[in-house]
Image (cartoon, rainbow, N blue to C red; front, side):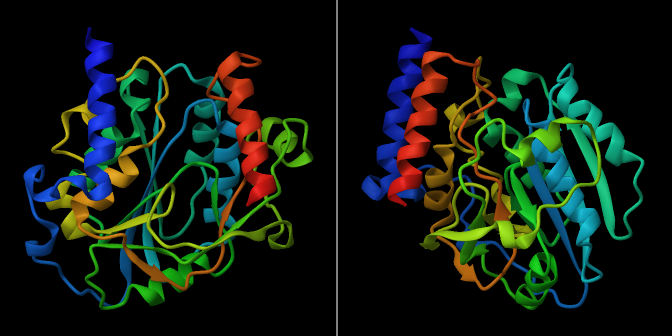
Length: 296
């Protein structure tokens, strides 16, 4: 019965977040009335990702903060992960010992049932962050050259509740035996993917979605991340797709402001390692991603 109710609520909130119902009915705090600072100078940024069985992608992400560090931001890199996920833990242990000026590593363990619903960790981070801005992302995103430097410049004196990089770069859709993914699995190391291996895809981004949601710190602390929607703060027995993205924009009252920030790169991949290998769901998702890649 609980699963049936959750399924109904999932559909209800997706319809509501399409604009069918006023977001004001579901908010605890209105982002429009939050007092937002317009900070300048050296800003602080918290980057938040969740990682489950994706240690090889996380290696590239954390490496990018080493390879392309910035003097314009104080960065807290927060990674939510589960105890016992050895592929991820060994990567975190490796980078914990690497001193990067201006970067603070922040590893947070969650029971996997809470990890599987990304809005739970995002909500915890949003309400507890001390940063000027907080970037909700995924572990297959790389902050390549000029990404963070330009972001720091673009955020000067801004008080937008939500911003995002206008353009995205991505690899081709990588198979599991691709050299990039193979190197990532060989063991923790500081790795790099040349910028030439990333190409523009999906055109100009029109909204803050997926791993490209950057929220003003004052708004994050006041509103959380879908904090007022119980379903999106409920633990799950399996990894959940982030339908909360739409609900978050709905609650924020905006699709976000596009910023001309280069170098936000994604490792695009066919197989979702979070799902059981060769399962029906895994096969269907892989075929969908291949079709989307051909069309997009």
